[in-house]
Length: 230
Image (cartoon, rainbow, N blue to C red; front, side, top):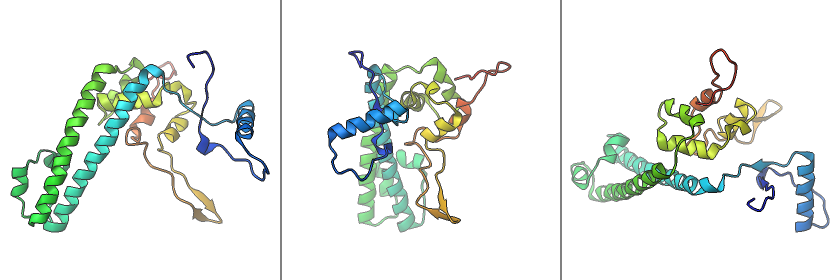
């Protein structure tokens, strides 16, 4: 790209494979991709600008660690429910220390298991906070994405994540295209009145699945009829 070439990031999972060929190698694949490109039906993905990739990768790492932290909390909640019939909220568990666990009516083995979960959770908290500090120091939310901060539950880090994963929102022709990209659109295949296969995913990687983003994408300036982003 820096050399002036136009680069296409092909979504190989969406490329229809040609069948019944007796011979197939890289040259044939290249010819087939060129044919799809010429027809205007080559499925391609978004290429994040080089200067933004470092911050975007930090955000993806943060999302990964947040998911791992959630699994630790869910493990604790399940153990408490199974062994005591009680429950504790995620916010309560996040504040737990070993002294708090010692006061729980748990068997010794279960208490040790909870302490292990909590130790891993605190370690993840430390790394998540470290990543968030670096992200907020390096990235700034573009003016056309400021509207994300008005969505309930969306803070600066999540808004930045959505902005960098989405890129130029103008690349989506309709709200439906953006909703599909966010995996908010159900998938259902039927034949003879019966459902075939499985439904599509209901959320986009934990960061773009809220229905509020469709409303944000379709917001219009009062009295102008123009789309407004933020």
